Image (tube, rainbow, N blue to C red; front, side, top):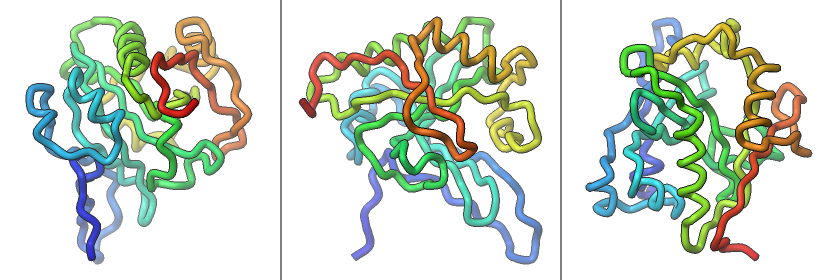
Amino acid sequence: MRERKTIDTLYPEHYYPSFLEFEQRHLLGIEVKTEESADYEYCFAHNKWLAKRYPFKTSHIAISKGYSAVGIQWRLGNGCYLITNCMDPEKAETEVEINSHKHLYLVLLYRHKDLWDGSPCLPKVKKFIKYLEAMPGNPIETIYTRAHDVGGYDMRHLRLTGMIKDVNATTSRLKSVYARYFGAKVWKYNDYEGKPFLKFDYNPKYPLYT
């Protein structure tokens, strides 16, 4: 029997003719508005909780043949967006399927070039995290990310989101900002480049796992 997709795993598919060269794309699903969020079934309880406050779309970044990045794109407001997914940190970014319900990976925070109104994004992320911390029966034990300059050629697929390219957002500067603003510390797990992930200060009030 084919597995039934829930609203938070219904990722748009990338169709392209086999006779054409592969083209990187950023594909988005339908937007689930906060007032409609209770009408859907969810695979992950934390997504259901977050959807009560934040509109979202499923996100699929097609990077190369057979390699994609999927997640949830949350609309934080004022043209600020955050893409997240559940990812097993031991497997780093080599896996595109969801492996873990306990670790929330912050894939990309960005300001949309056509929608951003100048409001700072970091306070919005902090509110996002604080709201998640208040979730009853919270399955998320860890929030983590990696600091990476997205200006390079190897990160060009992320710019398909419509993000504003910030020349000052270097890897070292991002590390410093995340440490200062989110209490981010070097974690024991490494990304696919062998560089350690950054674990955010995160304290769920009602953890599911104790």
